[in-house]
Image 1 (cartoon, rainbow, N blue to C red):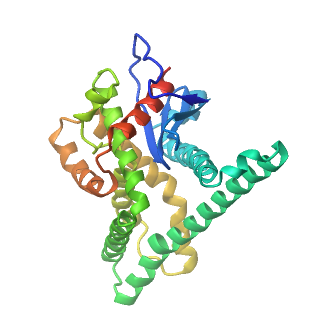
Image 2 (image 1 turned 180 degrees about the horizontal axis):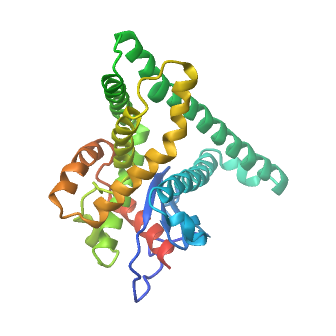
Length: 310
């Protein structure tokens, strides 16, 4: 449905729960415990909102709330919802570029939507395969070339190479002009969540004053994942065969679970000096992945969050 800039009113009472989000093409996705919302700004300056009811698996199946396990579950859910949000925003963006598709009959329109969805899934799979090679397999090959034998030093160098590749990748995509818009929406998402967590009314004036750098950000999470992976892989020693290298993939859920607990702790104990030290590198990295949004982008983030909280 189409919504004007004046988004739905906030409920009178707020439940104390966490919300999360993600920047998409010309918009923001927000997730609350009971719903999943994507808000995007159309070329006619209206805000389009797509909202679906969604209850987290950890709420539907209580045994999944076990520490560490819940982190792996949340990661899978986040990937699923993130792909859905990106798919919706990509379809809308393509429709904006090709308005003649609006005149298609229902059958042809369905084929167009299916094609876009399949194309996006294929792109993501190819991207995942490339990321697996660059961030997982290539560092192992490079460490092999150094001739290092000790397990501790091997995994330390492997991890440092992986982090270096990640930082280069983040810096490289930040040079892409189109990504700057996404990073601005990323900043708008963080500002609105900060305001919500502070108990303020969600207005552009209120959320402008907040930082674009949030300790619970997915960028920070990825950095924590890479650091935790170094510690976990050290217990596995030095891999000697291809099968031993790929066996490490089985430990990804464990790494994700531990990383989630670290991020969760950082959100609960923001005032702790130790937590501040641990989260500082992730906040520094957000200087690249978030940019200061304009007022229109803030309104999109507010519309997404208010809709998710209704």
